[in-house]
Length: 447
Image (cartoon, rainbow, N blue to C red; front, side, top):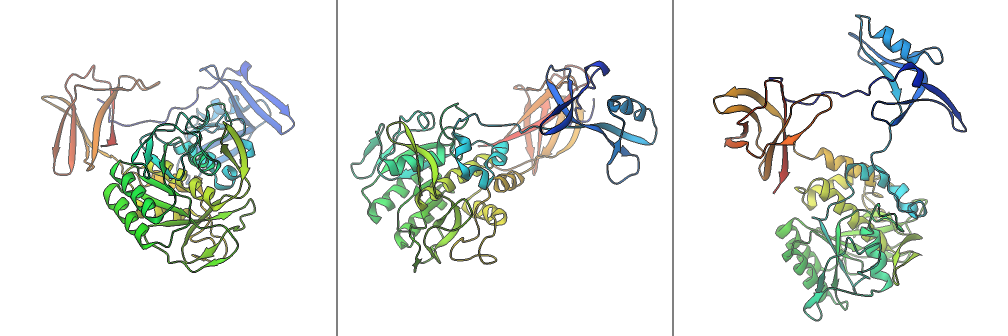
């Protein structure tokens, strides 16, 4: 039985007559038809090579159209560990929303890199505390769910919406990759919580969200100084590990607000990373919100500006981070964002940018690194079958997967695997191994 784990699966070499060099406006590249039927591109006249004992790769220059011949010759040498073409790689996810290129903010914060980690999960919900947004907007409907009316104490199941909240909802969660309109920060669920505008209503909205499993509360209104709302933010944090986010407030002025520990206040930046909203001690982060394109009422799209929209964009980002690692709490989320933000203005924290202008791509990559790792410690035959042991992670449900071949893998979950936990070790046993040549892996998911 082979030791469980994954091995590198390389791209099969093409036949010599399938390799061509192509010249286009952007320059020359190599191209061949791979065994899977897809066309692959590579850097021409270059072969990557790893000599045994060398600490780094080398790039070997070869004659035009002789890359494959070089690979075959190098493969016969005892001093060569491996050699391969310098294949051009592609992003694993590229949204097809037609107006994505008109949303400058996604390029500024690295959304495409974040989406390679996750485009968001419907298990993470974002409350837009405001007059309800247009819930049946074609670019929001798939992510919109019923909310609550604080003023009337009843569900909100439908709404024609107002501009302010509909722009906010789109910044956070306009449906990504639906061949329609724009893209929000993530495909998390978004719901309306209706208020008229008082602190007491905002407080009630936060408490309702916490009690109904809503982890992110967007309040694109003034009030980030409020002790009452800070107390509600603490409840949200303790109750469901939730995050309360509020607007840094529009206007080029200083606000003598307290920086409340349980409220994240967001200032607004433009395409040049200039702050276009108020500054003060209350600011925690900055995000794009000036001249941005999002959803609006009457199933339309519009360009608008406001710290309200930088706030909702921030909320959508947080939704994706929590989709990547649901075990993170507000403190961990803030740490990830601080460590990855682009430091603008004064070094470190300042009254305009807070801890910096958010970098979505770097934050998503850092969130992925916070995921606890399941490491297989032992694999062995037992009287009950083939047992695979790993470190036990609290709060996770583990499953055992098996593939009966290496290339290509054919992973299937073993629903009949038995599970035992002793101290900090979990053991999953395959009671009926198919043969003596198989590969195993363990996957864990949070409860």
